[in-house]
Length: 314
Image 1 (tube, helix red, strand yellow):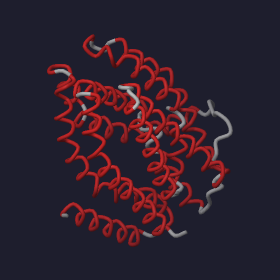
Image 2 (tube, rainbow, N blue to C red):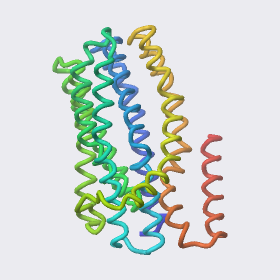
Image 3 (tube, helix red, strand yellow):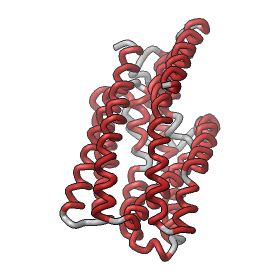
Image 4 (cartoon, rainbow, N blue to C red):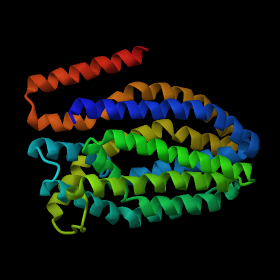
């Protein structure tokens, strides 16, 4: 399959997911508000924002893996190179090494939770437990994105989201409150991890990590240094788009978070349209970098820039 077909497949799957999620969200959000109430749903929105902050503990190590994976496959011309498996193993090892710090940060978030958010304690405890347990397992999805298996990743995200949404709605109808939202979130996360692990093992067995590489401090240090620019970008995004929700929740209460967050969703949905082009194309650009001449790389980058500007105009 050519790079263009892989890009278009991932781009189409991503847009389909985005369109369906937006349409379903227009029904699910009023449904949840009617069944759970504004304060309960606002608490859940605050809890999910805590997860966004904990993701910053990654330091960009997993986030940069798609680019690094695509660069290796572009330079070697192979998806079964030993260097590729070593890269995935090193990323998995670093992510596992971070787990104690992530666990401590999760415990601190629970410890310092305001008393007014007490109903959120148990659901957030479950969510954080799943988050910490699956923290290094995000490596599987990142490796698949780097290998440009974008159609599968997009389809798996859609299926996992659909499963989580169905579980949430079914449990809310049966009388559960925050527990229903928690169960739906956990189903989505665990389904995605399992699907990506099975796909990587089946289609790209040579890239499947087989051991932890705690040796080679120089390589690990270089990997962390290359990841820091992603960490800076992630930090800026979370502080810009997430801190306001926590401030509003702390000052005005969980109920005030709902209208603010729902209003912001329209902006987020529209802003994601042009970004979807760049996110889908990033692995292909990294693969082209060592294998194509500068004129070809400029031509591809210019075409992507024009497409992004066109979608931004729309």
